[in-house]
Image (cartoon, rainbow, N blue to C red; front, side, top):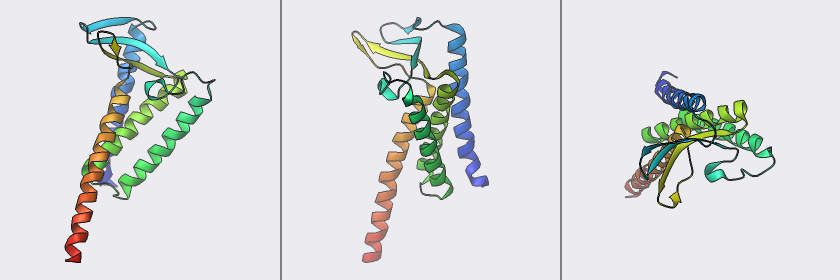
Length: 166
């Protein structure tokens, strides 16, 4: 279990950074208020997302809150099992821990607020990327690491199988 502590700490760091940033934003901004950080590129704002990425299912009647909470719990359980059972190589475990922390951060929002708190807004002229938060960032980077780990691990397994066949 001690070999899993760094992954627990990484997930915990993601949760803490996410929740502190959301707490600060909620304490200092009104809904949809924007503060320009980098002109014509980046604003700090306060918006709420009852849905998932890109406001997927945001306009539903509220059932999506429970759906996304359940989905988060399933994903967290699956990824933690993968870490414990060594299903992933090092980068995959780091990615899984990042996703776990981000998923817990957004799940806390859904339980406390009924929606996810978003505040990072990137844009260029008329194009706006949907606002997101620290948890979302951990989830996205973690997903990339898991994918890269999957390719790397598959390559190693394929190479090992080819070497045994020769």
